[in-house]
Amino acid sequence: MHFLTYGCTVQADRVIPGLMPARGEASEILITFDASQSWCAEAGPVTHSSPGLLVRRLDAGYHLVYDDGTEFLLSFVGDRIAAATPPGATLADTCTYLVGPVMGFALRLRGVVCLHASTVLIGGQAIAVCGAPGAGKSTTAAGFAWRGYPVLAEDVAALEDRGQAFSIQSGYPRVNLWPESAAVFCKSGDTLPAITPSWEKRYLPLNGPACFHPVAAPLAAVYILGSRASRSCPEVRELSGLQALLALASNTYTPYLLDAPMRAREFEVLRRLVAHVPIRQVQPVNYLARLGELCDAILLDYSSLAKAA
Image 1: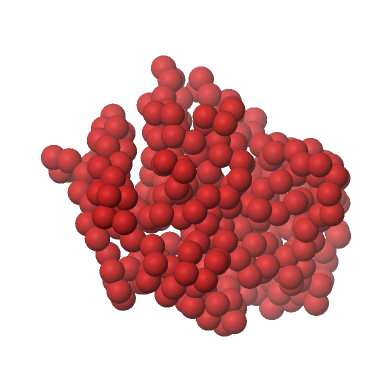
Image 2: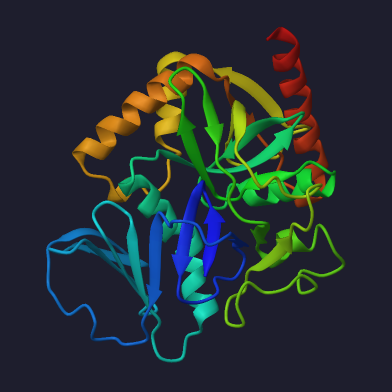
Protein backbone atom coordinates (compact mmCIF):
# COMPACT_ATOMS: atom_id res chain seq x y z
CA MET A 1 0.00 0.00 0.00
CA HIS A 2 1.25 3.47 -0.91
CA PHE A 3 0.55 6.77 0.82
CA LEU A 4 1.55 10.38 0.26
CA THR A 5 2.56 12.66 3.12
CA TYR A 6 5.04 15.51 3.74
CA GLY A 7 6.10 15.38 0.08
CA CYS A 8 7.15 11.71 0.34
CA THR A 9 5.66 8.56 -1.15
CA VAL A 10 5.42 5.98 1.63
CA GLN A 11 5.01 2.24 1.18
CA ALA A 12 3.59 0.31 4.14
CA ASP A 13 2.42 -3.23 4.82
CA ARG A 14 -0.64 -1.97 6.71
CA VAL A 15 -3.20 0.77 6.18
CA ILE A 16 -2.03 3.90 8.03
CA PRO A 17 -5.07 5.80 9.41
CA GLY A 18 -5.32 9.38 8.21
CA LEU A 19 -2.76 9.28 5.40
CA MET A 20 -3.76 9.96 1.81
CA PRO A 21 -3.50 6.93 -0.52
CA ALA A 22 -1.13 7.27 -3.47
CA ARG A 23 -0.65 5.37 -6.67
CA GLY A 24 1.82 2.49 -6.65
CA GLU A 25 4.84 4.63 -7.37
CA ALA A 26 8.44 4.08 -6.32
CA SER A 27 8.46 4.64 -2.56
CA GLU A 28 10.86 6.97 -0.76
CA ILE A 29 10.14 5.55 2.71
CA LEU A 30 9.36 1.91 3.48
CA ILE A 31 7.36 1.20 6.67
CA THR A 32 6.86 -2.24 8.17
CA PHE A 33 4.86 -3.25 11.24
CA ASP A 34 5.96 -6.10 13.51
CA ALA A 35 4.09 -7.04 16.69
CA SER A 36 7.14 -8.82 18.13
CA GLN A 37 8.89 -7.23 21.09
CA SER A 38 12.19 -9.06 20.52
CA TRP A 39 13.04 -7.61 17.13
CA CYS A 40 15.41 -4.95 18.47
CA ALA A 41 17.39 -6.41 21.37
CA GLU A 42 20.67 -4.69 20.49
CA ALA A 43 21.99 -2.27 23.10
CA GLY A 44 23.37 1.10 22.10
CA PRO A 45 24.28 4.50 23.52
CA VAL A 46 21.35 6.67 24.63
CA THR A 47 21.12 9.87 22.58
CA HIS A 48 17.94 11.20 24.20
CA SER A 49 15.99 10.41 27.35
CA SER A 50 12.80 12.09 28.56
CA PRO A 51 9.78 10.94 30.60
CA GLY A 52 7.99 9.86 27.40
CA LEU A 53 10.77 8.74 25.05
CA LEU A 54 14.12 6.93 25.01
CA VAL A 55 16.32 7.02 21.90
CA ARG A 56 19.36 4.83 21.27
CA ARG A 57 21.81 4.88 18.37
CA LEU A 58 22.36 1.36 17.04
CA ASP A 59 24.48 -0.07 14.23
CA ALA A 60 21.36 -0.24 12.05
CA GLY A 61 19.91 3.17 12.92
CA TYR A 62 17.95 4.88 15.69
CA HIS A 63 15.81 2.93 18.16
CA LEU A 64 12.90 4.91 19.65
CA VAL A 65 11.02 3.51 22.66
CA TYR A 66 7.94 5.35 23.98
CA ASP A 67 6.81 5.02 27.58
CA ASP A 68 3.88 2.77 26.63
CA GLY A 69 6.26 0.26 25.00
CA THR A 70 5.75 1.29 21.38
CA GLU A 71 9.03 0.97 19.46
CA PHE A 72 10.43 2.21 16.16
CA LEU A 73 13.67 1.56 14.31
CA LEU A 74 14.71 4.21 11.77
CA SER A 75 17.53 3.87 9.27
CA PHE A 76 20.22 6.55 9.40
CA VAL A 77 19.03 8.10 6.12
CA GLY A 78 15.33 7.98 7.00
CA ASP A 79 14.26 5.66 4.18
CA ARG A 80 13.13 2.71 6.34
CA ILE A 81 10.95 2.62 9.46
CA ALA A 82 10.05 -0.52 11.42
CA ALA A 83 7.34 -0.30 14.07
CA ALA A 84 6.49 -2.65 16.94
CA THR A 85 3.13 -2.44 18.72
CA PRO A 86 3.18 -3.60 22.36
CA PRO A 87 0.62 -6.08 23.74
CA GLY A 88 -2.70 -4.41 24.47
CA ALA A 89 -2.11 -1.54 22.06
CA THR A 90 -3.62 -1.10 18.60
CA LEU A 91 -2.27 -0.24 15.18
CA ALA A 92 -3.96 3.17 15.53
CA ASP A 93 -1.98 3.79 18.75
CA THR A 94 1.28 3.06 16.92
CA CYS A 95 0.31 5.17 13.92
CA THR A 96 -0.37 8.18 16.15
CA TYR A 97 3.36 8.28 16.91
CA LEU A 98 4.26 7.31 13.36
CA VAL A 99 2.53 10.10 11.44
CA GLY A 100 3.78 12.76 13.86
CA PRO A 101 7.12 12.61 15.69
CA VAL A 102 8.48 9.49 13.98
CA MET A 103 7.85 10.80 10.46
CA GLY A 104 9.13 14.18 11.63
CA PHE A 105 12.41 12.57 12.71
CA ALA A 106 12.61 10.57 9.47
CA LEU A 107 12.29 13.83 7.54
CA ARG A 108 15.10 15.38 9.60
CA LEU A 109 17.29 12.34 8.79
CA ARG A 110 16.49 12.95 5.12
CA GLY A 111 17.80 16.52 5.40
CA VAL A 112 14.40 18.23 5.62
CA VAL A 113 14.13 21.01 8.21
CA CYS A 114 10.71 20.95 9.90
CA LEU A 115 9.01 23.61 11.99
CA HIS A 116 6.83 22.61 14.93
CA ALA A 117 3.85 24.27 13.31
CA SER A 118 0.42 23.85 11.81
CA THR A 119 -0.04 25.42 8.39
CA VAL A 120 -3.05 26.92 6.61
CA LEU A 121 -3.59 28.34 3.16
CA ILE A 122 -4.61 31.98 2.66
CA GLY A 123 -4.98 33.22 -0.89
CA GLY A 124 -2.84 30.42 -2.26
CA GLN A 125 -0.01 31.11 0.20
CA ALA A 126 0.92 29.11 3.29
CA ILE A 127 1.23 30.62 6.75
CA ALA A 128 2.81 28.53 9.50
CA VAL A 129 1.57 28.83 13.09
CA CYS A 130 4.41 27.74 15.41
CA GLY A 131 4.46 27.25 19.14
CA ALA A 132 5.44 25.08 22.06
CA PRO A 133 3.32 22.02 22.92
CA GLY A 134 -0.05 23.27 24.15
CA ALA A 135 0.36 26.73 22.64
CA GLY A 136 -2.68 26.26 20.38
CA LYS A 137 -1.19 25.50 16.95
CA SER A 138 -3.71 22.82 16.04
CA THR A 139 -6.62 24.73 17.57
CA THR A 140 -5.71 27.81 15.53
CA ALA A 141 -5.49 25.72 12.35
CA ALA A 142 -8.90 24.23 13.14
CA GLY A 143 -10.24 27.75 13.65
CA PHE A 144 -9.09 28.72 10.17
CA ALA A 145 -10.49 25.49 8.71
CA TRP A 146 -13.84 26.28 10.34
CA ARG A 147 -13.82 29.56 8.40
CA GLY A 148 -13.11 27.81 5.10
CA TYR A 149 -9.33 28.21 4.89
CA PRO A 150 -7.72 24.91 3.83
CA VAL A 151 -5.23 23.27 6.18
CA LEU A 152 -1.92 22.22 4.65
CA ALA A 153 -0.30 20.38 7.56
CA GLU A 154 -0.84 19.85 11.28
CA ASP A 155 1.98 19.97 13.85
CA VAL A 156 4.79 19.16 11.37
CA ALA A 157 5.65 21.82 8.77
CA ALA A 158 8.20 20.24 6.40
CA LEU A 159 10.13 22.94 4.55
CA GLU A 160 10.88 22.61 0.86
CA ASP A 161 14.06 24.64 0.52
CA ARG A 162 14.39 26.62 -2.71
CA GLY A 163 17.26 28.85 -1.68
CA GLN A 164 15.61 32.25 -1.33
CA ALA A 165 12.06 30.90 -1.17
CA PHE A 166 10.39 28.13 0.82
CA SER A 167 7.30 25.97 0.52
CA ILE A 168 5.48 23.81 3.06
CA GLN A 169 4.72 20.20 2.16
CA SER A 170 1.21 18.87 2.62
CA GLY A 171 0.68 16.54 5.59
CA TYR A 172 -2.54 14.59 6.14
CA PRO A 173 -6.24 15.59 6.23
CA ARG A 174 -6.80 15.74 9.97
CA VAL A 175 -6.34 18.19 12.84
CA ASN A 176 -5.86 16.56 16.24
CA LEU A 177 -7.47 18.35 19.18
CA TRP A 178 -7.82 17.94 22.92
CA PRO A 179 -11.48 17.62 24.02
CA GLU A 180 -11.65 21.19 25.36
CA SER A 181 -10.50 22.53 21.98
CA ALA A 182 -12.76 20.13 20.08
CA ALA A 183 -15.72 21.48 22.08
CA VAL A 184 -15.19 24.89 20.43
CA PHE A 185 -16.26 23.39 17.09
CA CYS A 186 -19.09 21.11 18.24
CA LYS A 187 -21.48 20.73 21.16
CA SER A 188 -19.15 18.38 23.01
CA GLY A 189 -15.50 17.43 22.67
CA ASP A 190 -16.66 13.81 22.51
CA THR A 191 -18.58 14.45 19.28
CA LEU A 192 -15.47 14.29 17.10
CA PRO A 193 -13.91 10.86 16.49
CA ALA A 194 -11.09 9.71 18.77
CA ILE A 195 -7.67 9.38 17.15
CA THR A 196 -7.49 5.92 18.80
CA PRO A 197 -9.87 4.07 21.15
CA SER A 198 -7.44 4.52 24.05
CA TRP A 199 -6.34 8.16 23.58
CA GLU A 200 -8.17 11.22 24.86
CA LYS A 201 -7.44 13.34 21.79
CA ARG A 202 -9.99 13.78 18.99
CA TYR A 203 -9.55 14.73 15.36
CA LEU A 204 -11.32 17.13 13.04
CA PRO A 205 -11.56 15.42 9.63
CA LEU A 206 -10.63 17.68 6.72
CA ASN A 207 -12.86 16.38 3.96
CA GLY A 208 -12.54 17.85 0.47
CA PRO A 209 -10.35 20.52 -1.15
CA ALA A 210 -12.09 23.33 0.74
CA CYS A 211 -10.73 21.92 4.02
CA PHE A 212 -7.39 20.34 3.05
CA HIS A 213 -4.74 21.37 0.53
CA PRO A 214 -3.03 18.18 -0.73
CA VAL A 215 0.06 19.70 -2.38
CA ALA A 216 2.91 21.99 -1.32
CA ALA A 217 2.34 25.75 -1.15
CA PRO A 218 4.71 28.75 -0.93
CA LEU A 219 5.45 29.88 2.62
CA ALA A 220 4.47 33.54 3.01
CA ALA A 221 4.76 34.13 6.78
CA VAL A 222 5.45 32.44 10.10
CA TYR A 223 3.42 33.28 13.23
CA ILE A 224 4.85 32.14 16.57
CA LEU A 225 2.31 31.76 19.36
CA GLY A 226 3.41 32.97 22.76
CA SER A 227 1.85 32.04 26.07
CA ARG A 228 -1.82 32.87 26.51
CA ALA A 229 -2.48 35.88 28.69
CA SER A 230 -5.43 37.85 30.05
CA ARG A 231 -5.50 40.79 27.68
CA SER A 232 -8.14 42.77 25.80
CA CYS A 233 -7.20 41.38 22.39
CA PRO A 234 -4.47 39.35 20.67
CA GLU A 235 -1.30 41.22 19.77
CA VAL A 236 0.98 40.66 16.77
CA ARG A 237 4.44 42.14 16.40
CA GLU A 238 7.34 41.77 14.00
CA LEU A 239 10.42 39.72 14.80
CA SER A 240 13.58 40.27 12.80
CA GLY A 241 17.28 39.45 12.75
CA LEU A 242 18.69 37.47 15.65
CA GLN A 243 15.41 37.69 17.56
CA ALA A 244 13.55 35.97 14.71
CA LEU A 245 16.29 33.38 14.24
CA LEU A 246 16.27 32.41 17.92
CA ALA A 247 12.47 32.20 17.94
CA LEU A 248 12.47 29.88 14.93
CA ALA A 249 15.29 27.75 16.35
CA SER A 250 13.11 27.24 19.44
CA ASN A 251 10.25 26.00 17.29
CA THR A 252 11.78 23.34 15.05
CA TYR A 253 10.58 19.75 15.14
CA THR A 254 12.40 17.06 17.17
CA PRO A 255 15.43 19.31 17.90
CA TYR A 256 16.46 16.97 20.74
CA LEU A 257 17.24 14.22 18.20
CA LEU A 258 19.61 16.22 15.99
CA ASP A 259 23.33 15.60 15.74
CA ALA A 260 25.88 18.35 14.97
CA PRO A 261 25.64 18.17 11.14
CA MET A 262 21.82 18.28 11.31
CA ARG A 263 21.96 21.31 13.60
CA ALA A 264 24.37 23.08 11.27
CA ARG A 265 22.05 22.38 8.33
CA GLU A 266 19.08 23.63 10.35
CA PHE A 267 20.81 26.88 11.32
CA GLU A 268 21.79 27.61 7.71
CA VAL A 269 18.22 27.02 6.47
CA LEU A 270 16.66 29.10 9.25
CA ARG A 271 19.10 31.95 8.57
CA ARG A 272 17.86 32.16 4.99
CA LEU A 273 14.25 31.71 6.06
CA VAL A 274 14.49 34.74 8.37
CA ALA A 275 16.02 36.77 5.53
CA HIS A 276 13.20 36.05 3.07
CA VAL A 277 10.02 35.26 5.06
CA PRO A 278 8.30 37.56 7.63
CA ILE A 279 8.40 36.18 11.18
CA ARG A 280 5.77 37.44 13.63
CA GLN A 281 5.19 36.99 17.36
CA VAL A 282 1.57 36.52 18.50
CA GLN A 283 0.28 36.94 22.04
CA PRO A 284 -3.14 35.24 22.15
CA VAL A 285 -5.86 35.82 24.69
CA ASN A 286 -6.47 33.23 27.39
CA TYR A 287 -9.88 32.02 26.27
CA LEU A 288 -10.73 29.35 23.70
CA ALA A 289 -14.06 31.12 23.19
CA ARG A 290 -12.09 34.02 21.69
CA LEU A 291 -10.29 31.91 19.10
CA GLY A 292 -12.00 33.92 16.39
CA GLU A 293 -10.21 37.07 17.58
CA LEU A 294 -6.87 35.30 17.24
CA CYS A 295 -7.69 34.27 13.66
CA ASP A 296 -8.84 37.82 12.92
CA ALA A 297 -5.57 39.28 14.27
CA ILE A 298 -3.47 36.94 12.12
CA LEU A 299 -5.60 37.64 9.04
CA LEU A 300 -5.35 41.40 9.53
CA ASP A 301 -1.59 41.26 9.98
CA TYR A 302 -1.13 38.96 7.00
CA SER A 303 -3.25 41.29 4.88
CA SER A 304 -0.89 44.15 5.71
CA LEU A 305 2.10 41.98 4.78
CA ALA A 306 0.51 41.00 1.47
CA LYS A 307 -0.22 44.64 0.60
CA ALA A 308 3.34 45.67 1.42
CA ALA A 309 4.87 42.89 -0.68
